[in-house]
Length: 198
Image (cartoon, one colour):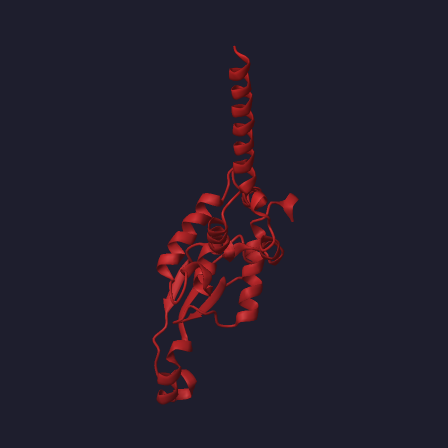
């Protein structure tokens, strides 16, 4: 091999190594990262949501992998991940519960993503029996009134209750009784973490 050819091969090797290194450290683009963060928003813990805002581009793939690794379902067969199930629920919630934005972001969608299909759903008829019979007030406020009740009986991610746990939603997919609702869903989100990650 001639000296010129050897120099060219070395230069090509250095350039290739450099380009591979750049590709590996560049990580996810801002657009890809934001799309992923938006998708997993329903079960982000507060600490993860805060950390996600400051993850360097080179560390984003590792952060995402660690996020899913921490949610391997310890109750299922060893090594079974819940990622596919949760991602499928996100896609379904975006279609089923879309109001003004992605369906997985509102209260109906987050409940569905975290808990799955309720055991029982009751649709409420909006009428004069709300607000003490004031039909005019009912007409004005109908978008904010109870539209559906979802009941989960003996769900493993909810506290035990003899009658199950119920969630009420308005026609805008907003939860009724928001503080208790948020507390229950935050507990459900945390329940996806494996014991070692808690």
